[in-house]
Image (cartoon, rainbow, N blue to C red; front, side, top):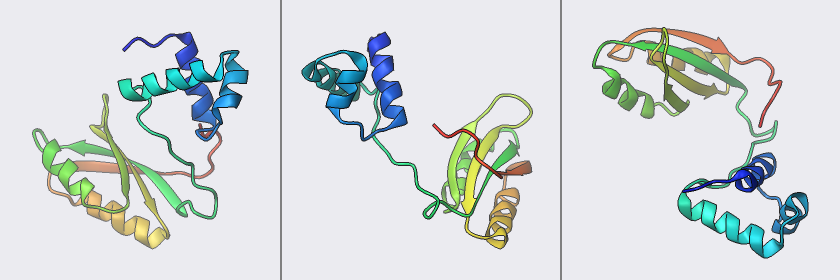
Length: 142
């Protein structure tokens, strides 16, 4: 699927506000509303826009979030991923290049729950080592 600069601009506007009305997107881009709607439909059908979502406000976000750097034994990644998938506090796991194999994003309501979740990740069969980075203050969120 071909994506041009106007498509990128529309996607950037939606990344800032996924609920932006088509009329507002049209004004921001200088395009007709029907043109904007047709582009959005094409981007959705083509997979460039995979869906629309919300960012949870302070009252709904978990009290604690952390990134866990996980090193995995050779050939153990599928089993580790399966184990991580079963843990409710694991929100995302991404393979990485560098000194660790996975970057795992986790959430918990209390320090005790976070500690238990980190223990469960670290003791999973195939995990060689893990290092957790507890998030303090979000400075940029897009």
